[in-house]
Length: 382
Ligand SMILES: *Cc1c(COP(=O)(O)O)cnc(C)c1O
Image 1: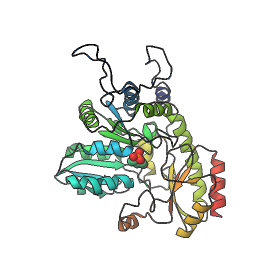
Image 2: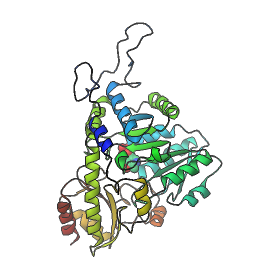
Image 3: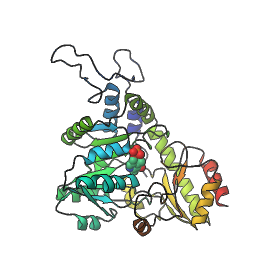
């Protein structure tokens, strides 16, 4: 496994440093101003109205574009706001192919909101390139994947799918929430747009709700900026500042999340109450070899299936250090029951087919000492 890029670590730490010419402030300031005084008629300081542009947001958006290796970054009030804005790029009659192992909220947005505007989606196993090719329709305008998938951590081949999208002349979108640009940079592997729920690892402290889009080329970036400004779900400047502050430790956090998750996944695998562990870092994991070609660390997310739904409930009940809560990517370890929580909007038959049952738990491994996390799991599984 390649180590986390040192250059990215420096880039992250230096976000905003040297950008405040007026005071030399090391921390770039928050500009709460909603509007800006024009120097004269037909003149602008570069900022007119904060929905259209804000200096704090600009520092953040530029930093995210750079981290992902894209041309344009845009930040939104949540991951869903970022996805909604991106989906508004499509028109009535368009069709999207989407990973079936995906965030439940994305499924709900597509099925219960965008179907009203006749933007349709179908769900495929994107870990199979042949399944993706077979599912393409004449009206398909985009492929949208999550890799690793959620909650089963399936691995899709980003480069191979990029080739398929290129020949089909459709947009290739990757939700990079689980790995962040520190561990995986889809734009460099041929994706056109990267999506993030920055509420997760980018924010990293369970205290912020934000979303991100980064486009590979500037043209698409301008089209998405038009939609961001026209629909208005921008991230407020205070939250932009908080996200800048969070990004400074992102590479360090991802390195530790990955190391701890591997340790815990290995421990879970050897526990008699655990039937199966889903973690890309385990050699048995489907896609383990592919993962190592396209990513630089295994990340902090793992799922595991215990012997019975009853045992899953007992575990959640007994945990003391680990919090039973939705969301992921924070410094604190969180555990959830996807079938009942994050994925409750996906039809029961689909959950069953995918193997998302009431015995499947998803763990977001935090930055506590891994021994303490293991001790908590151990006493709760006893
Ligand atoms: C949480 C999440 C989202 C939605 O983001 P919010 O910030 O909660 O709106 C989208 N995709 C993935 C993979 C997520 O985990």
